[in-house]
Picture 1 (tube, rainbow, N blue to C red):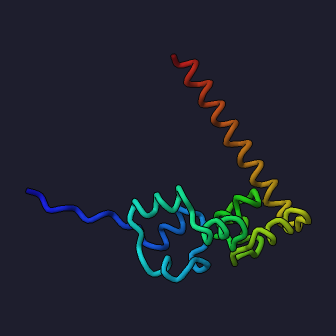
Picture 2 (picture 1 turned 90 degrees about the vertical axis):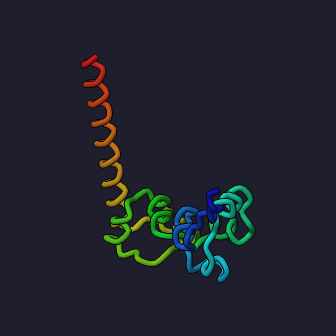
Picture 3 (picture 1 turned 45 degrees about the vertical axis):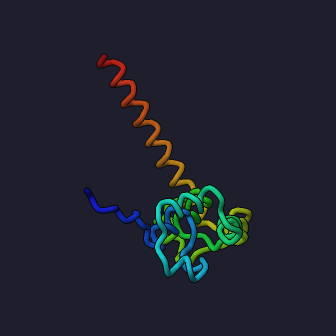
Length: 130
């Protein structure tokens, strides 16, 4: 007989990253204990109020801030944003964008456009090869 396997657990930092939340803003018990896959899945299916509130108002981690602003994480650093932002702060930036944000959004749009052009070129090459 094989011994029973212990359930796989996620470290708090990994769980927070997968949930798209800022770990220091979570409750202490979330920060100090790992989650099993079943517990993690349950959090995603039926988020408790604290998780719903964090997702709604923040503070948000850098990847989420960058996504909401439509720029890269590197663009955040170039713009001098190193701290997490709340949804209210993100909205304020979008309503009255500073020059660095306008430039970073243009850069990101150019990167997306180039990536789309390359995908189309590669698709055309594959189609002509068959």
